Image 1 (cartoon, rainbow, N blue to C red):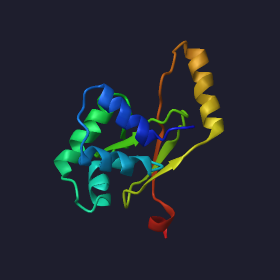
Image 2: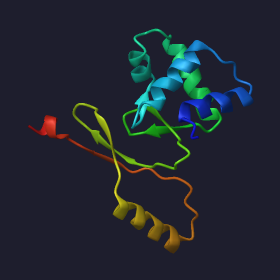
Image 3: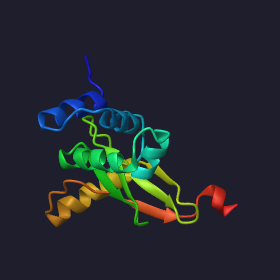
Image 4: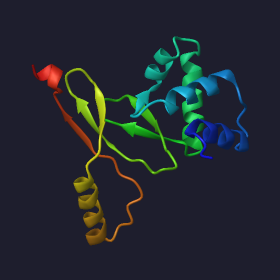
Length: 141
């Protein structure tokens, strides 16, 4: 039986000594349903303001501290977070410089190119993120 990221996250936080509470449960549920990175304001908005913004930030920081989310910087000064799933699912980001929309993309050829750079450089690349910026289809029209 597989466990969801949310269930694993709750357990890992408990084991790390964090208290269980409604804010944590709500924030984790929102993150579990996302397929790309989201900001604290996005999470707060998704919760229809049931949880205060400061509580959202505290939960995100605790998740980051125990390695359950990765903080993503797409170059606009807004911290975004996405769950680190056990499957190792990995993607990169497209960012619209006009409207700020962020979308996930993956590209096996890009991943192979990164592995070739790793092999040639001698580095053991532990993580990487590619951020491509430009105008989205909507903003270009």
